[in-house]
Length: 102
Image (cartoon, rainbow, N blue to C red; front, side, top):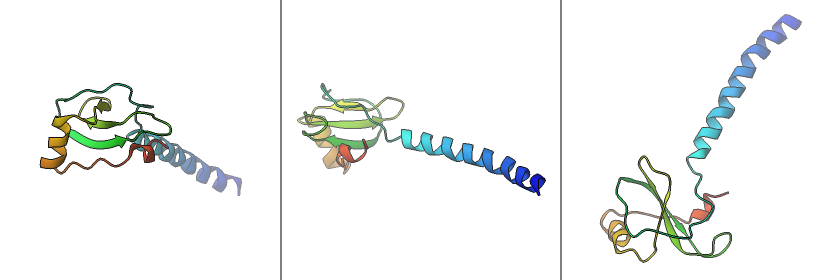
């Protein structure tokens, strides 16, 4: 009876560890800087995702956060003509960032 339990335990434990590690790595893709305090007007690179940081809790200033290939998330000024053009021509959608910070 104990040998059957230990064999099942030996299989279950590695599966559990792999599942936890994969969950953490997938969740880390959605982690953004705490809050933007300064922003750029324009960046180079392919935009993978865009999020809007709206003024309020926890952040007090309005910015857009861009996930650019090979770079950490970047802050863009909300009045950036470059970003407005990208949003219009490439139909870039920027949902609120506060939903992705939790």
